[in-house]
Amino acid sequence: MIEALSGLLGLIKQTSPVIFTGLAIACVIILFGSGDLITTIGLTEFRDAKKPYIGGCFVLSLSIVFVQAVTGIIGLVKSVFQKWKKEKDRKLLIKAKQAELARLTPDEKAYLVPYVLSQETTQYFFMEDGIKGSLETKGIIYRASNMGDAVTGWAYNIQPWAKGHLEINQNLLEGYTPNMQRHSRW
Image 1 (cartoon, rainbow, N blue to C red):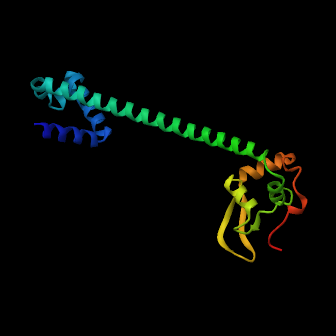
Image 2: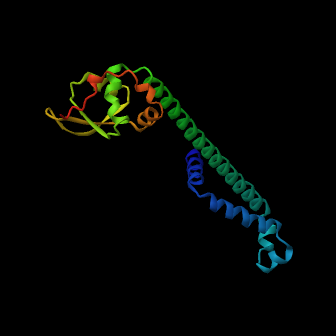
Image 3: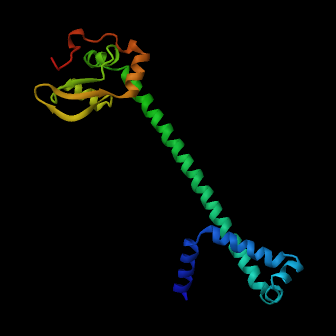
């Protein structure tokens, strides 16, 4: 008995709400349709004999459609809320990273000057470069390619949010170490 009920509930869960909506509409027509309509389609005897079953089917199908609609709406609201929260968290993270730009060392600033003031897209740094490592750890620059070598170095680009913020706030680059400003591809 429990297995049969479990099977029935599983079947109901998998059935499309469109089917239950159609079933509810059919029940409404049979139960509440005018006498002429029911007589014309030949369901008068069927309606009179099976009215409790048709009514139960109507209530059940309408309830299932309602629950599926509410569940869908809750899922949609939850999805929109999660998307909003994710975007809000992303903006807070970028703001925190932008605040980090105000605390850069003079050597770190020197590495960023060519990206911002010279509009260079890519600079090449060696793997053992500590300043590059610091900027990469802070999420300000990223390795643009896995291809590189010990002679010319590896390609690094600046994050778009960092470049945009530094272009607007070029005063954050003031005080960089001039002799550290370099392009390691000599």
